[in-house]
Length: 227
Figure 1 (cartoon, rainbow, N blue to C red):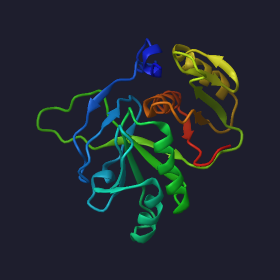
Figure 2: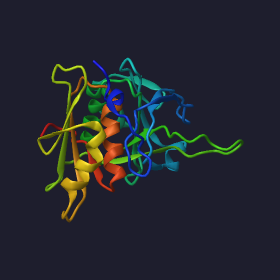
Figure 3: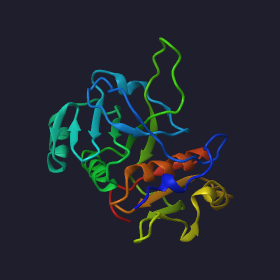
């Protein structure tokens, strides 16, 4: 099964979509290194580099880490419940682009159990930092709670060689996703996109949809529970 990145032919630059690529990412202060998906529309998340930042890492084979401690999906929420945190602090998820969405979704469910309404998905950026310059982490702040009147994007394998995309139940190609989102979001008071993805898909395919949503100025929702 090919990843969605294999069917994206144009760049998300000035709003266009590019093939998803991966890059080896230096570990953040928590020490677990993964290959995060490359995106173009993420925003700086400097607080992810603080010593007390809550970071959950997910490796390509599906191993979870809370900080540097390996945990199971069942242990994750319990570990978070037993660690004190600033109630205004965010939860950062640093997932490998090749990890299955099913594993990443378990981190979202654990986050919801401990009263997080949002999570930050950390990503890799295509630009190379200037020599000697430190670049803060970047990512997407996504909601874990479904919103009313939102545009729904579905990405599914459906047994095909490439994932299938639908915007409000209408099939679209990856190259036309941005235009389809813009059209679906017209005349709405809120520009919100709910992403529903098959659990077995690579996490990169989900990140790609969020990147496209952000390219048209929409907020993204990854429901922690099934709709």
